[in-house]
Structures are given as structure tokens and as C-alpha cells.
Length: 250
Image 1 (cartoon, rainbow, N blue to C red):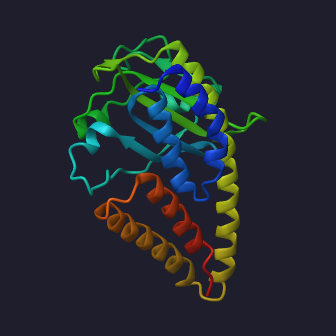
Image 2 (tube, rainbow, N blue to C red; image 1 turned 180 degrees about the vertical axis):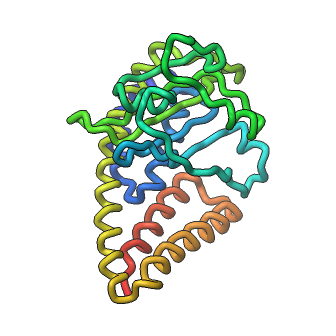
């Protein structure tokens, strides 16, 4: 668990570290990993805004991951939810305000949002405390929502997120949003270039680039873990591989 001093020191370095990551998917993974470490949370998710919808884009869950083999990854379904007051993430996206719930199963019936228990039932998981923060630019434009789940104390017992956790994560989200906006712009440029390439070969060029990028990253990760490469080095080279492959032409 990070001390308050460690958290403050990490926040000062966060913007520089995140802006060095070029690939959007790897950036979201890093944002979620660091966010969970800041408040010692078991799980978390990132939703990305697309017009009036939130796309469930990336998730981590330490408890569910521990049930898998070391070389396996969580498989999750992507879905979309509207930006309105019916869901927790939708409510935060619409209001632009953080929401800190000590126990989602102890729902206040006067509030418009509700917690969907379907994931817990399917995955055999218990969600308790949930801290949901909007990812907004300095101009107030909404990029998405960061949701951190199940805070833990030093003995790994589930606890609520504190008011201090909420303040730190709000500051964290503002820094992460800057890096996220940059990565989204970079991906949009690359996708436009790929579309131009597809005009010459509409059936294969873009799909081939995406497949090669994915295969290269998966093969490298398997090799690196078997050869005990440090995780920091793995993350850096994954980002480089994705960037090179997405810039590949012809």
C-alpha cells in the first residue's frame, strides 16, 4: 500500500510517465493499474465516451485474475450504456461529479442510479465499495469514466474508499485525461491513414495491420514472461511494438 508521500511523489511524475505511452490500449491498462495501486483497490474499469454512450473498454480484477493460470488473461465482454442517471457510470458521466459508494448493495432508493448485479452473479464476485470519477479535459469535455472497485486495507479486507481517496483520484483522473486525449488523437490519425491504405486494398490492408500488431504483442509477452523479463521492460516494448505495427504501411 502506498504512503501519502509516495502518492504525492507519484502524482508529480504521472503526467510525464503517461505521456510517454503511445498506444491507447496500453495507456488504459497503465492508467487502471496505477489508479488501483493508489487506493489499494481490487478491481476497476474504464468507460470511453462515444457521443451519447459509454463504451465499457477495459477492466482489471485481481480476485478473478488469481483464479486463472499465470499466463492467462481475463476475458470480458464489451458493452455500451447510455449517458444518463440510470447507471452509476452513466450518472457520473452526465453530472461530471465523482460518486463514492461505500456499499453498492446498500442502495439509497431516493437516488436515480442503480447497481447491476448481473456481473457479480455471473463471475461469482462480490462488489462492495465503488469510486467512480469522470475523465474530463481542462475544458470540461468528457472523455470517459474511471471506476475503481473494492478498496482493501493492509490485511486485504474490503473497506470503503475515503474522502482522501476521492480527492487523490479526482486529481489523478485529470492528469490521466490529458494523456488519454493525446492517445485518442494519435489513434484517430493512424486510423485515418489506415483507411487511406484500405482504399488501395480494401479487403486486407487494415485488417492485416491489426492482426500483425496483436500477434506481435501476444508472442512477445509470452516470450518475455518465460525469460523473466522485468514487467516495466515488457510494458515499454509492448507499447513500441504496437506503435511500429500501426505505422506499418504496404
